[in-house]
Length: 210
Image (cartoon, rainbow, N blue to C red; front, side, top):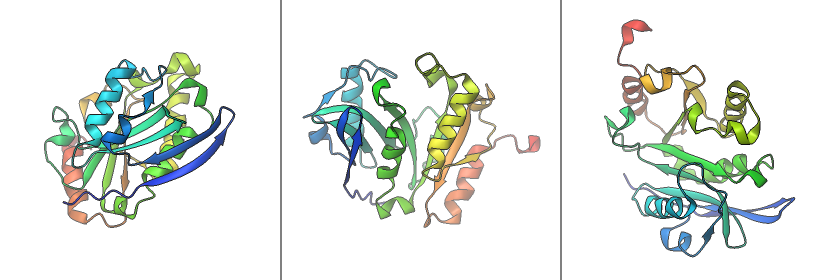
């Protein structure tokens, strides 16, 4: 599959000034920006910046960022599922995963997350993809937001729903280990039935339970 990338940039006014929501950003451009020290959800900032540069260099990798001047204050990543996860057991060419989405605390509540998702799917090529995302409560910043696990999940579902992600049932043990965890996916308009059939087989191993 040829992985096309159409670059988009949107200007957004916030209480912290003008920011640019843009991407997919190539690795050489990402390397010229600074990574805000508040981006610590997954790794220390310098390590996470290196990780997204590497993702951007993958054939299927896509990085959308929010930047204030030359400082990245939020990002979302797209790439093939981790080889250690169930979702990689059948390498579906047109199925990628929203691997991480993070915005610094100061920009939360400004619509930054929705803006990242909106720019992510501006390119017509995204209608060729099935994009999945696995939401695990242990990745959520419950302490920083003051939300309980159920309110945080509602917030995540609303944000993902703004980009037409829908809930999908699964018997994956990591997801079923806690009722707040969930699997969501966005089916592009040109995704063939075969892709969804293969995705269904990945979702359920113990079909007699459903």
